[in-house]
Image: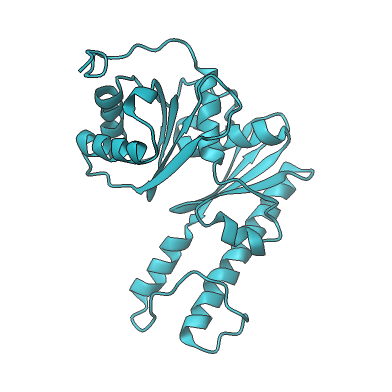
Length: 272
């Protein structure tokens, strides 16, 4: 099976696919907190325990692809793949075939997750797209009707905004990101929720409108990330929510780079 791993600043999301079926949906997926200090052994034990609980084992894994925006965690996860699965992982980085032309002034500056999302969105819709990814930062990525990665926008993520408000304003409490009944808050908590929720809706819809105007036509707008379902219910711009967009993009890129890859000697290969 193919193990797809997306290492983000806040969470690591990973899932399993049947690698012989290019268009198969994810069989099972998991989410864990990103801890850059974890060792390869700690990652290995955690992954294996999650697999075991779901009825899988290390012998089921014979291919791995990784997207990472946390370099300190990437090395440990790569070493985990070699040691615990006997697999040399494919890491999404410059030189990897994606099928997408990157029109950024310096393509090396683009986060791997943003390219992976672009690959998945264009494959799914075959038209101009805007991907809104609600992660540690909220990213907006634009894909042309010809499948080119045009660039986009980056805004502070919802959690970052909430934490900044709590930490920098001494009398304001930490609140849940939840839609209030009315925009006019009648308590401090309701007022903060109104500003956070409706303010963020306005940010998303406003940026999407500007991006769409520059792309031209009517690009498809798809959201992904943990808070995507909540935002999408109120946003006028978001048309679809696909929480597996990044993992599906990794699956696609792996198939586009399917040539044989060397595997290091490991416990699995040694039959231990």
